[in-house]
Structure formats: structure tokens, C-alpha cells
Length: 258
Image 1 (cartoon, rainbow, N blue to C red):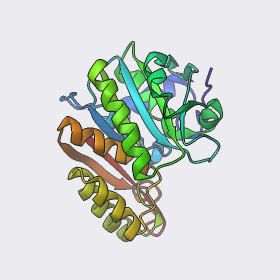
Image 2 (image 1 turned 90 degrees about the horizontal axis):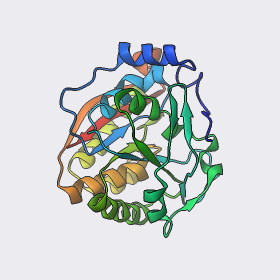
Image 3 (image 1 turned 45 degrees about the horizontal axis):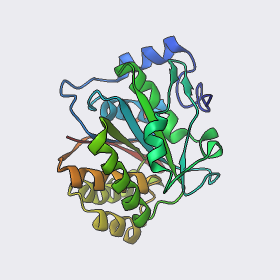
Image 4 (image 1 turned 90 degrees about the vertical axis):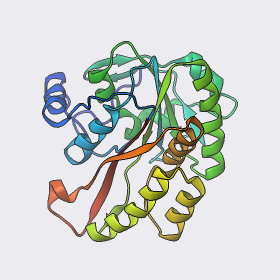
């Protein structure tokens, strides 16, 4: 069992409080036909509304592939999980039938997932919105373009055989002024919506944009480009909306591809 690592800190620790938060803060979109979602992973008080908006656009499928960055550096380059994942809303089974198809480029590594929050915080929204689904959690310790493309190609093969959707977990600029964060993130988001993976990596590098999950975002870009789906920025905000501090913010974006 992969027990929750950030329940009670990043999000409410009780079932009632968690459902209350989602029902009060998440506006479920009418058009739920998304194939790919980019969703933030900060504490719910900062980015929960944005994450919920992004995830609520996804179609109802058998399995959700969730790709998140490895913040702790404890895992392999690409780390899978076999364990059932638990949140206050219940347990979720991992789709090992799909995960096994990734073992030529990834490894099962529970250590990578033990304390990592980037995948966990997406799960309560899925549990609230969908029933009888499985997940494929993938932690990216290595986020270069070549790794992102290799992972994308494997996921595209899986999409030919299975009903799946993708969540790419990432926050945007970290700990800069709000004006700087918005300016930098706008440049990155433009490349994302244009499905320009080379332009995205170049923009992140040249502008020193501190996007923590640039690898998962690149996977989203490549999947969307190959599936010929269009992207939409549903919302962009910063932590200043919650804290009032506009000198040191983190940026959050909800992006859907359908």
C-alpha cells in the first residue's frame, strides 16, 4: 500500500473535509472530453481550485496515466509503482497490465513514490469525479527532452490499445515576483499551446524558468501533438492570490487538450 504522504498538509486529511473543499472550490466543466491535462500540485489552498478545474475536463476512461516530477531525487530516471494508492477518499489500484508495458524504459521503484506529492495530490479529484478507474503513476527523475519523447512514444502505443488519459503534474515559476513569474510563464505556456516541444525546452532554458515538472509537460506536448488535439489555457494564477505576497510567488496553470 502506498499510504498518503501529504494528507493533512497539502490537502484535508479527512474524507468530509476533502469532499467539502472540492465541492466548494472546483467548478466541474460541462465538456469533459479532454485527453491530456496539465495540473499543478501545490497545497490545495494555493492551487487546488486550478488543479480541480484541469482534471475535471478529462474524459471518463479505464486508466489515468499520471506523470509527475521527482522532487526528492530518491528514484530512478523513470519510476513506476505497483502499490495500491490510498487517500482519504479510498484506495486506487495500479494498472500493472499497462505499467508492465513501460518496463523497457522504466522500473518499479516504490522509494521514488514514498514521499513524492506531485502525483498524490491529483488523486482525490479523480476519485471525486470518476468511479472504477485505475492509475499508472510515473515519477520522472530525469526530465530531458529525449526521455520525455521516449516516454511519450510508449504512452502513444498504449493509447492505441487502451482507453487512457494523461495528467502531467507541474507547477510553473517558483519564488520570483509575480510580474516576473507571469512574464516567464506566459512565454512557456505559449510554446505548450503551440505544441512546440523544442521551443518549450529552449524557452525554459533561455529564460531560466523554474518549472519543476517540465518533463511531464513535455510528455503532454508530445502526446497532444501526435493525437492532434488542441490545447486551451483554462486558468493561470499565482500563490499571491492566497498569500497576498507578490514578491515571492509560485505560478499555477490549468491546461487541457481535447
